[in-house]
Length: 229
Image (cartoon, rainbow, N blue to C red; front, side):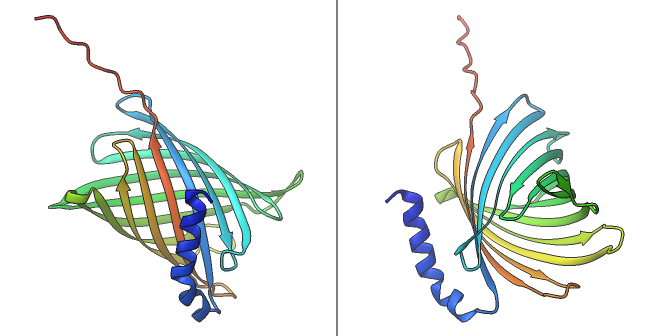
């Protein structure tokens, strides 16, 4: 039994009472990894991959891969863009994201204000959905790092505003609490609990999400040559 399989069993055992009690809700598991490569001081590229299981972690929901690129304007502002290709049991999805992010610090707490513009189109075989989806997703995140143990904690809240022509309304929100631990200087492991609530829709589904992630920075750091004295 590998390490990931052991983590799954432990997490499911811990959350079994919650799953059993909240039978009118859904419990979803996300597992993924990401690779980051710094192209320069301003530009970086990233590749994300994730698997999602739903129906109380008993059914495949989706799997996707997302290549993206980020431009660092300065220490406070970043702009990024990504393309996501998703596989689901019934259809494939193509999604493009454009993100604007502002970061600043209040004492020991880092605040991140992020706005995501999302365009998504679904396809079944060679046929595409006639009405693409457009969303704007504002999110605010507070991050606090516990230095003695290299543990980073975060809390965020996010709204989903549907810009599709016949809707144009808020229909979902998320609360996210997470921890991240630096395994090495370039590798980290994260664990997040996400509560998602839909509204302004016929079926107001409440979803509890557990997200496991591994990230690695594969940038080859140049070694400084020793200058002769």
